[in-house]
Amino acid sequence: MKNLIKPKALEKGDKIACVSLSSGLASAVSQRYQRAKKQVEESFGLHLVEMAHTLDTMDDIYQNPKNRLDDFMNAFLDPSIKGILTTIGGDDTIRLLNLMEDWHFDIIKNNPKVFLGMSDTTVNHFMCLKAGVSSFYSPSLLFGYGENGGIPPYIIENTKKTLFETNAIGVLPQSDFYITEFLDFIEQDNIIRNTRKTSGWKFLGPKRKATGRLIGGCLEVLNFVNGTKLWPSLSEWEDTILFIETSEDKPDPSEVTYFLRNLAAQGILPLIKGILFARPGGEFLASEKLEEDAFIEGYKDYDNAILKVLKEYNIDIPVVTHMDFGHTVPQVILPYGVLVEIDSCNEKVRILEGGVI
Picture 1 (tube, one colour):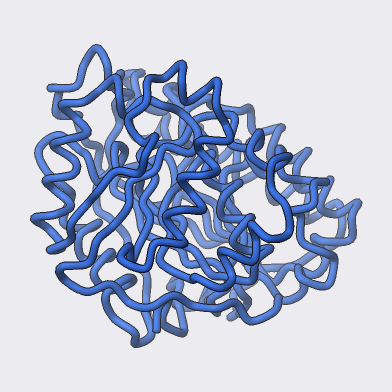
Picture 2 (cartoon, rainbow, N blue to C red):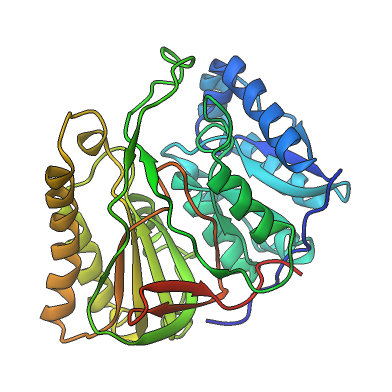
């Protein structure tokens, strides 16, 4: 992967634009939105502002992808804005792609700044990737930063280290708990979700070190991007570490198998140096009253799906699963394009450089 342009580190007092690039849920859960803004501002000393269409109704957001793209571009163009945070994911950010011309990518390239989000925001991250700019797979405003009861300390500490400091991020911490309940933000916004003790990350495959540059996102959304003009060329996949997570739509483990076989068919999988897989999202791991052993068995289905494909293609690379990113809370931030090391011998994942300058 080519070296990506890194944005400048955030500082207290910086103005951050909130953008709704997919779902317009923010307008429907105004109480949660305002609470999340306050939590971010108080935790990091930032000033959050809306773009022109951030709080449009859900229907207006859906009907007007051009407004969403305009908000995205205008946030990059505004020199007073130092970072961009998505309000939530969704399922149709890919509709913005047909509206994008070469000059849109030039806007991103010429105005690099911290861009944050997850899930359907994978599309926007690949827009940044095509422009040659590093972005950050992170909590969204409503999911992660907007948790009832406050932002988890795990997220606060990782956000400060990743976005406010320029030195190497270092060993990624493992959370000792995770949230297990699905929450309907519209109907259940005042509920503080229950937590479950984690059994830790799982290090699979060969016991050795592997280094590569981070690329990935939400499995379902990677399928949206695959084959479009955002999809990196074969050479750009060389010496990368692929990170994957799954959404609350709880895709079957076989979908992981199919996706990795597709990468193998394209010649991508043999170029990858390692795989990071998140704790699976989805209500089947959230609402059912299962004992920990049953949860672990559910995870193994995904682990086996990954290992099956690697065996089919005789690929022997380290794999880390059950990780704290994506559709789980709390979650770590992953900067695109930075050099990461999987150390299976000592069961550590290290980011070997800073995400910002």
